[in-house]
Amino acid sequence: MTDTSTSLKRTPLHAVHVAAGAKMVPFGGWDMPVQYTSIIEEHRCVRSAVGLFDISHMGEFEVRGSGALGAVQALTTNDASTLALGQVQYSLLCYPHGGIVDDLTLYRLADDHYMLTVNASNIDKDWAWVTDGGRGTWTNVSEATALLAVQGPRAEGLVQRLADQDVTRVPYYHFVRGKVAGAPCLISRTGYTGEDGFELYVPAEGSAALWHALMDAGKGDGIQPIGLGARDTLRLEMKFALYGNDIDDTSNPLEAGLGWVVKPAKGEFMGRAAIEAMRAAGVKRKLVGFEMVERAVARHGYRILKDGHAEGVVTSGSFSPSLERCVGMGYVGADLATIGTELDVDIRGTAHRARVAKTPFVPSHAKKI
Amino acid sequence: MANVPADLRYTKEHEWAKLEGDKARVGITAFAQEQLGDVVFVELPKVGTKVTAMKTFGVVESVKAVSDLFAPLSGEVVEANGELAKKPETVNSDPYGQGWMIVIKLGNPKEMDGLMSAADYEKLVAAGGH
Image (cartoon, rainbow over all chains, first blue to last red; front, side, top):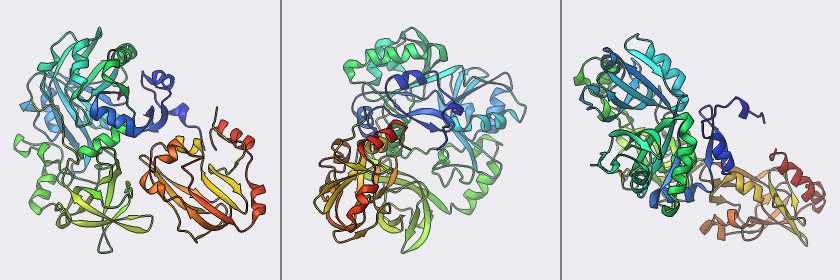
């Protein structure tokens, strides 16, 4: 095997993970912690207590100026004009043909000033895409920005003890600016786990001190560092899409179940005409959640069968630590997308029974206030 | 320090074999289970199945990955660890003990000599496992 570790990018917290004994793996061009102790243990820690994630690999772009809203509206599918100051919105970048460039969260930082948080593996592609139109003044602040996620039922209490703002008053998908353990942060009530919690945007140089402050202050809460392995099983239980697995340039928002962030009424945007044509024609396949009937793990790329015929493909699959069953997501024909429909997954040449399931697989505890 | 019992023989695919008379007990090493992470499923052959040295005999699935199991030795499977269906995590907690996978009645006991010693396997692990 080739040692690729030297060519991989590192977050400002890389040394902290190595010192903590994390198992490091390549992910989207980054050398990232996949687990510190055990994926199942870390997963349960987030569901029952609080976990700390380094997601500094994600990218952040800012756009400002009188053309900022116009630029965002032309690029993204959701309606950015509805965003209040301090509000966050889930949205998509689409190609003219309706395929997905990336999914993102959009922050309205000030009048005529927005931030887009994009997937790590897409930073270069997205940057070229958003700056191509020449509208608005764009800044790529990805390298200067670290991002820590504090997630779990004890996240709010922990962050509150260290914050100089009343974070209990920050509603879901909103943010405030303030200091956490003395570090200037954008404190965002968002996440990718289905638990309550925050994502803390912090200057890269202060991120290690903030990490240690959270780990120390969270000892009594049972805090643990959480790797990308548990991040993946946590988001899978919520049926949150992962770009590159469940959505990509060959899938469209409607079949991915993301039609709720496509707002054609707002006016023209990239992909609008194609997505509207798809909506009119009817969605041919759908991204469904399924449970395996037997203890067999369906994984990305495995075929989904109905009565022996290939009918779709698994996009994500794993063991669900909460349910202690194997679950997954995949595209199937719209006629097979009804909850309870029996399907098979071709696992190494053997058909294993699966059933289309209600999602999220476990109830969300994100604070919807 | 790597956990590599001296009385076992090893493959470069990270299985161990323990000679028990004309049979050998087989499992995966501590290093292998660490690399895999939480084991959630082990697919083993039925008793009576013929296995061939360095061919796959089963599959181990962790939360993150799926990995083939390679038979260290040729012969016939005379026992398979059914407990692993209920408690696959035993492979993580006790890879050389309760986490054993199969017992092979040896077709060619001389194959034992082709397996790695504990000292050689330790060098393999120290080099990163490959």
